[in-house]
Image (cartoon, rainbow, N blue to C red):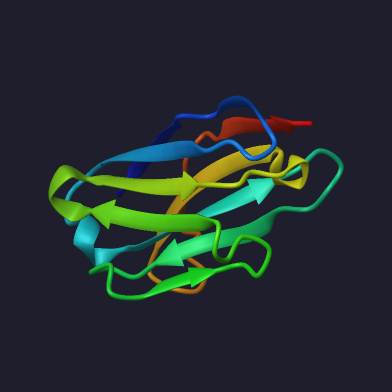
Length: 119
């Protein structure tokens, strides 16, 4: 069992950067792939990024590729999403996730953290 808690969201202007963090509780975090999903107002949930168990492989949605970087530290039971060059369309609630699948790690979800990007 894994519990996830996101932090680091906020209100920023377009072009700014934010770093989201995810703290995990539970044992053997290295057994799980992890990822980030987001849900914008009036839109469906979408995949943002994922990282494999050891951190050796990462995956990104085309919309964030080159701007966002996902990372993890299994020893510290943490994961992060560095978001640069933020755009208004990045505005959403961001969710930290964990699971068996590297492409769809959705077995566990955090509570979400709000990211708002204004012009």
